[in-house]
Length: 592
Image (cartoon, rainbow, N blue to C red; front, side):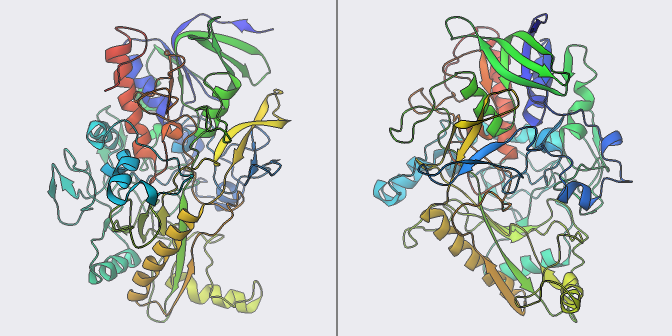
């Protein structure tokens, strides 16, 4: 029997980056907030102490920090005419679990999207003509501009203490930064991280070829920093245990190191962990959310009434919960009708491995951070002429090697035996002298009619609900882009002095077993009207105005950057709209 609890002003589903931001902002506005989190409570001192946090086997190979498929999974297929099967082990992406969400295990690469990314379809159509785009590509403008989002980018970066070198301050291009970025209102809060040898060698080679290299913006801090909430973050020690790991040094920006220490002291906030929301409840008319139903670890069911419901789970689970709750019209790829599940995207990453003479080069790859790197942006977005190339999209590229961990970092030249004495000798000869960045080319993925999410008709979860079904494949546009960008990246590696470069452009079909990034986007996208989107530009549901849906779920397509900075900026903008507009006049917000 479901137990009904006393009402709250706000119920938040998920306590990652967006859940923490919204909870902190709305408690500051005087609201009584509860966050319901499927995973466990996680705290730096107890869960990521330096004594055992750098454990590659435990966290990288056995995925202890992550959601286990036995808890929740999805089914996958490439094409509509295929039968989808359950994913038994995560491969192409990793899903966070517990307080902090994916903000615990991210690398902390903190990129802003380009101004043209927010007006993508209109920009590309204006430059190349509507006929240049593939007929089945469904990209669209976001409904907001970079300039509208810039103050909220700034808020997140100053919350995190982001380390970087500004490339564009109020329209003035700055030396040493990214000349292609949109205008910033002020510099990064902390200087860029000092770069190791291979990264500076990449920068010199790129500069010699006429490119403009710059340090990757990093949430691994170059120096100690106290953020606007009074939370102190430490200096990165280059331990090379960032992605897949919690940070025991308090030097990687995460909800644990930036927001939660303040939020958890508030009497108007409560976090309930190990509790899974199974439905968003609505009134009889279906136009107002009345709260949520969740199940705790004992199997007891609870109803939590609330005036405002904010969905802050990971992108996949946001979409699944909307579909299960009957909110919005499910997308039908055959007719193109419906909004929930459409414009689902991932990332198109590729790489090239550069082998150098081990008697002359020593890169010490174990001296690294998650966001270390020197990058170029000449081939991102529409920063270059796509006309002669026959594709759109792009990405940043760079020497962004974030670790030299011993189990996974054993690059050897082609032709080396897979085991034995010769393999061991090749690992010994190449470990210190190889440039091996897992995503040296970090490319965009644009949206298509046949890449989408819906509910599986066959498989159920432990509550008897349909699993989410993912239909995803690479299209010719992205594969051509990947081949072109990987060639440009390999040219720079050769200029660095590599004796051998082995290219690994992305090839099809999309493989759910091979890791790319955890940057899944879309499925309930934002826009200017209910005909082209599930959410308005404040991330408010068109169908249920007291429901707000956060995260990369709202992205109409994915750009050539990591999404977290944009996810957080949208969350700050949404929170401000709730505080300054919705609370004064509950109902649909006016698009601005």
